[in-house]
Image (cartoon, rainbow, N blue to C red; front, side, top):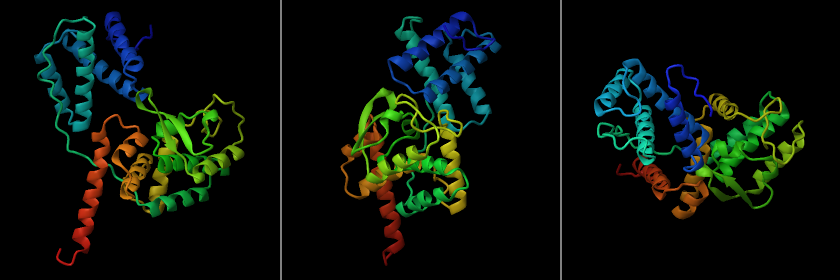
Length: 305
């Protein structure tokens, strides 16, 4: 079995954590980034217990309380603490489920209340400006075409960046619909605009690397798999060059896709399906964005305001 490469962790703890990770990946369908974060969080608590000579696999609420105190002293953000708490609760619930331990008092582990955040969208004219400007970059022409094609998929079909970059050559958009593998290994069909198919086709025609159907559609400069960070950095540069809003990120293009559909009268359930949200409450946040924007416009324009 794979080793976690942590000197302070015992073989039993190593095997237990890896069994949990395998369960999250194969049964629960957690993505790579989530798994990495959860693993780091649990290893952090394991190291804490080792340093204090505490029992890692069956801690009590006082050990949890001390660990929370350490996190508080580090002045971590609330979302970070909330994720660490979620990781540990998930791990120990797995231990109880698999009868590795009989029970555990986790009452002290209440996730901190997070301020409700709303998805931040980008106006359509700014997106158009960014898509046009990206072709004027000093990079190789095929790279500009590649980055533009990725952004078209995010904005035009509402894909997550991980979903766009996980597409294989055989998945290249060609037609009216694209089948996407999303979170939890769940598939969904998203609509394709002609401009998306054209953009991807132009990128493929200019890409200097020959690939087979099972290799990544979007390639890096040397022909390997394209890193999400490359696209994120490209959008950062566009933000500075064009003076775009500070929240302009690849994921904000997905938010724009949803917000513009809602503004155009699309049904909330349909948007949920297109975005691949498992819960309607997640999609419901876009109605809050729309209402907030309407209120802002009302205050700015109404003569009595």
